[in-house]
Image (cartoon, rainbow, N blue to C red; front, side, top):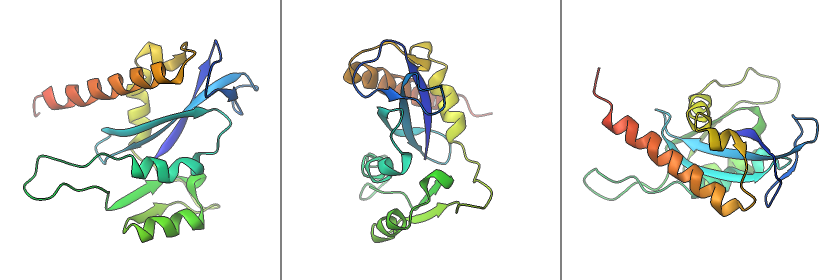
Length: 160
């Protein structure tokens, strides 16, 4: 689970002053992916929204896992996150949902994961690296399409 800032050139809904880009208008992608880097859920918010506020929405938005015999799984076993997601109330919520929170504490080294690789794959689609859409629904549709293309490419990749 992680977040990535993008520039919103024309503004629009879900944009705000970016804390990393000299207060220029921007948005933020919050992403949760599986252990192989397959994107499961992406949420677009204003650039000045704290990432920890989106934790529960990301976890609740993970679709059920299908394809195996039996009942479809609805939640992950563990959740990896960096220091920005360090919050005791959110840790307790994860434990209530029977999810093991593996989140770096403030003052310790960050956990390196595969989320950065997934952001790189998403931002290779030029339309997602800089946000040009005024309406969030259109941008979210493009993000969803990009996530589908990433999944399709992984499925069609021959085993090496």
